[in-house]
Length: 330
Image (tube, rainbow, N blue to C red):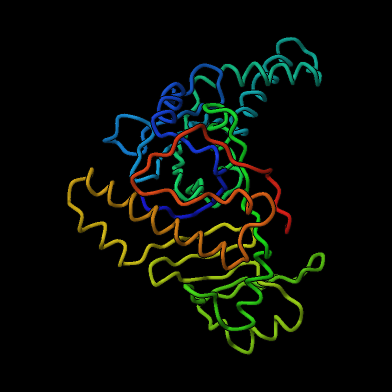
């Protein structure tokens, strides 16, 4: 269950999610397999096989999981059936099939084939960190994260998502870090980055397994290229690649965290609890230090910075994320 990617969104301080309310809302929208003429279906499922409900909380963090099922009906299959049907009509009736009739035949064939189509299933996990005020989604794809947020909006309206807005643009800060040859406190530069010429159709340079303080990298920076991705290591506990859209790609939880989780116990229930606790604590600290390294949150998000919540306190209220979906430094 260790996250492999991370997209994170801001939660407002005044509207925290009560875990019981969240579980009740998600239970009303369970996953149901695709049926009939549906192209896809999605709904909430327990985040682990041993759990009875679709929301599970451990010390202020509530994990959820959205399952999606898509019908797989390749266009080439539809075309083959359509060509055969057209040939049959033209042979029997000695006439050409017009464009409108072809479209109608295609729709009919699609409807006939859809109930028999194969299905492809996927699952997306996330957790709400009510103490720190973040929604953490295990994906590096914006569209998948937005799909989960849309499903949360339907279950618990309103649920407006806000991408974090930082004082410093990520690409500006990353360029400064690589130029200085030093990451901010708590982080260290890894051995990969992406540099891009900001002009239209500018060159993109990707380097891997390379010293980022080398003369070659400095020459690219001197020519005006900006760092759009950089590999970082946080406190020797998590390795990742930071992007200019504030996503964390290729998350790797290093041995120290893996060992801590494994020492909690051998059964799946205990291991799940320990992993969720360690992962949420580590990612929460990482994200807060990363935002601080980028100058902190800006605008309304800075004003709505949540006050610390005691470990024993239970957050209350309905969920919401203040702000809009825009990132000012894009």
